[in-house]
Length: 126
Image: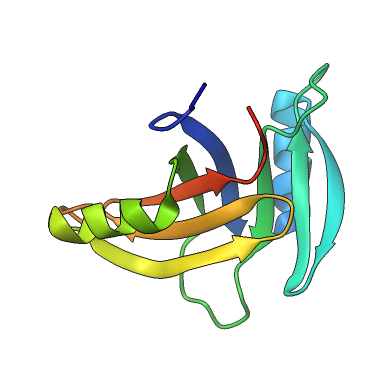
């Protein structure tokens, strides 16, 4: 069964991963596992009693003026086809699709009003 069109992942882009971990650990009881990635460390967040991560945290690149923010991702069956539909509907491709090992194909887009959203074409079954 396809999960296309459903929200599937959330991640925090932050200037201070340690502070974010302390905050969400205290407020929501989340625990964290750090995962090395080619571009740095990605931190997986786990809710109490949940075996699969509920989201992730990663640091903004140095010098990035962006404000700390949560990003949401929606499942799609075909990332490249979804990007074509975004452009046809008046949206913008913020980051062209790329592959993340063990995850799938990912892209970041903005809708016609500028709201940003990610798409994920999962390489996992189910």
